[in-house]
Amino acid sequence: MLDRTGSAQAATIHAMRRCQRGRAHQALRRGTAPAHKALDQHRLMQQLTGRELTREQYAESLAAMHRPHARLEWRVHASRHHAESGFELSPRLARLEADLVELGQPVPPVSQTPPDLSDGRAAWWGRVYVLEGSRQGSAVIARCIHSSLGDTVPCRFFGETIVPDDFGRLLATLERELEVDDALEQAVAGAREAFADYQAELDAFDSRERAVEMR
Image (cartoon, rainbow, N blue to C red):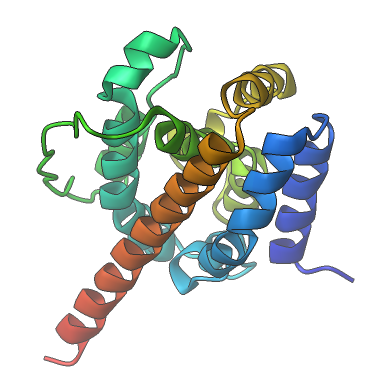
């Protein structure tokens, strides 16, 4: 039998399969699979779907996700490519911060650097794939959180998911934007970079927490 983490991953895979996989989608999925798996298995992510999740652990995971999500969302939304693409993207950072406040946690400050004007359009689409794809498993995570902590726990961040039609439109756009091999390679590299940055931020948060505990 699958545990709740396995069930969450299976449900995410099932949701992804509902959208037809084109060449770009397959390349992005294959190219980021190891990084995606490593991130899913990180302690701070895995505890969200555990049966023994506590309110303190939930708040810890949200606090750890704040900086990497803020950085990725800013890099995607503030880019000139966002305006030029005409693709509507919905920010979620305010939802994460509202959850933290209701859980009694401070909202960590995040310094945002000016957008890199030399950033390529294809690499930007790779980061969009990671940012918007992260919504796919949110409904499953939200159900696990409510199952462990009750329906009154704040869950705005994970509660806002992307419907299959919206994700399907994104995938169709990626197929059009990444038809050329060079563009697709740049998109995969951008997506990998986004996963690596997120993983590094979680690792840094974990290290700081352990250093505090050892004092």
